[in-house]
Image (cartoon, rainbow, N blue to C red; front, side, top):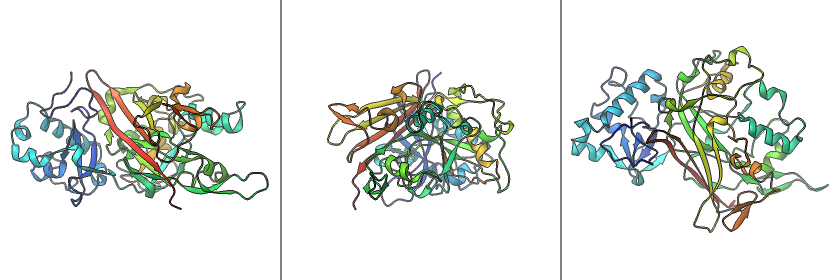
Length: 420
């Protein structure tokens, strides 16, 4: 049964009462940042709700977590506080609850049109890790660069592979991405190429936002890992394939990745995603004991990528994939991250890696879609092998419920020329 809010929510909206994703925003350019939740086409200002004394449960009534410039303090409180907030907000916004519905003065300052606010990064991201958790993506990349005989390295089936990313260059949706410069493979006996990347790509990913962390030298059990994940965002881990190809041996990605990563502004909680939990692909061989889950789950999240070529009015859908294609779960990723005693902290983020499906139309990046430039992609009268200046890339993601959607909004960025 669809929940009913006194705030009008269209059936195709990503933000019904069942969702209530968290973000951080400014009502005016000179306002202080503050936390909010999305409901329909509005943002509910949680600092106003807190100041009105409407978070009256035992865990939040005396907390200042919603009077912060980011969500770090709130996500660090853990599952009991998250659930208390969700129950409070769903009741407060329901069609039958008069507290906010019938208070015109409070509604005026608490419910703001989403189109008029400025969205910011939802958390201060201290550390960022990027995994490589899609078997289809791993197979395609291996086939391209090593050949079809042995496309996936043996270790990939035993542990979630990852590298440490650059948190400082993570930006919120709508931020332009400057084409990076760097070195590329030399031609013949010449010096390496240096200049703007010639193979700029998107990567369709999602990312988990860490809640309560762990102390240095301790681990998080895989069966408790979900209690340490606040929720998910869409993520575009922009990639300069030519820079990456020249630099990645022997230590992995560096300048080919660190120039920009875009995330959607709204964090959808695992509680909101729970009705869409689904089975995980069979893991063969069976993982080592510390990665074996009592209940192993992915989520049925439909994902879509659109490209609006420079100078064109319309966007073209270039791929449709699904979060459920991931081989390694987000809980396995988090448990593996801490198995050596690495400490995670509230607001840390880890990406899934490119989410590709088994069919060409579900590949999660241009490297795969164009087979490293060998098969140009048709985009409404023009073609692309990799991204050109002025191209805009947009991700959407949602779970389809019975009469409602649990969505993530949009994750978009436009490529602008290198100024150098």
